[in-house]
Length: 287
Length: 160
Image (cartoon, rainbow over all chains, first blue to last red; front, side):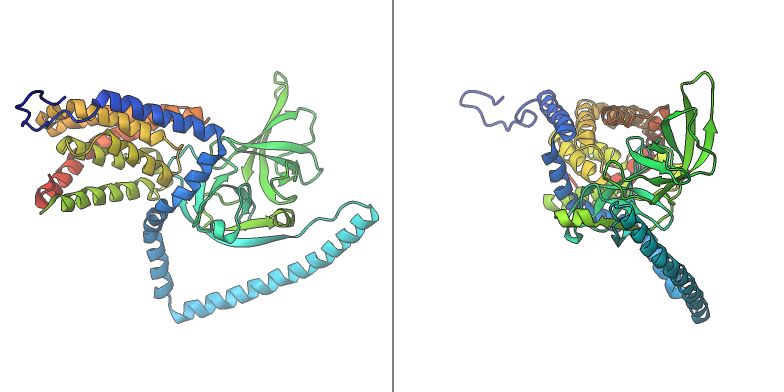
């Protein structure tokens, strides 16, 4: 420490406070504490969600080149191209509206039939459009960041979908943006059923962007390549009936107790720029 | 220029490094993202060890965790360990040729990746192969260039 005695005029250049070894010890213990606390306690997650405000400018910057490109592309389009695109979209809207009409009558019929059977009616879900602003830089983590946060009423566990199918669920709600876990993340699993016959199963992520596996499917189960898997609504996280994946491979090995079933996610997990956040009415009522 | 100005340069380089750590990469390049934050931190600690200490490195790690959305404390731990090592070794590092420095950086970033992978494994996200060490190689290859760039910055803005 400081030179003792009257001649203590030498400025302590090198020795300041605790040694670097002690500092490392304290700080690494502190980080280990944070890591373990993050796994066990909810408050740390809440703190991290609040702290994610400081990440907002980084996401904005990281997204800037893509935005600039799109803006450039939009501005450089000729009038003829825009008119053509507009006409195309009009036709598409007309077609979709026509289909929706048929759906409306089917839905009404479905409700009547359910009333006859005395079973509860399916609830309508409302949605909110959000834009993807970042993806997790770690290839082992299948997470995306979207540009809607707590101010829009998002909540943890909220399902997100794209035009083709179920994408994942919200795991962190920040003030300005939220983080979602995709269904292909190795730590994710969701209850599904086969659309054709209603057989239930659990679809687990594998860490590969184009593959889900169904675990513990009995060898005698009626499941074929091409079967569409939809969310079953069990587990109360995802609403019923959103397409999740299409079965791509069913392997029956007599030496194994269960069949190996692989499926490809329906949603364009690595391509969708716009996603839909689903608000189920039940969740709304609770808030 | 005064010391506050120097601080601004250091902050700015770290912000750019943080930005580079989340900028989207094509699918084939995802495993090889260089650890810019760790490299920039190592450079400044090597150049100004009496100014930037382990506490700085730890705080920077926490910010990186929030920005990247990784486990809270993961990069804080890794960067604190790197900071400790560079504080022991900075005098030797300054004597090394760029090639020798790159070799040491390879080991440093490798250790960083190992620590991060270890923390992720606690969360159930460990890598099944050794691809997670690829950033160490890429970072080492980039080091001479980055060190040169940061030295030019340091000299021209009189960061001391």
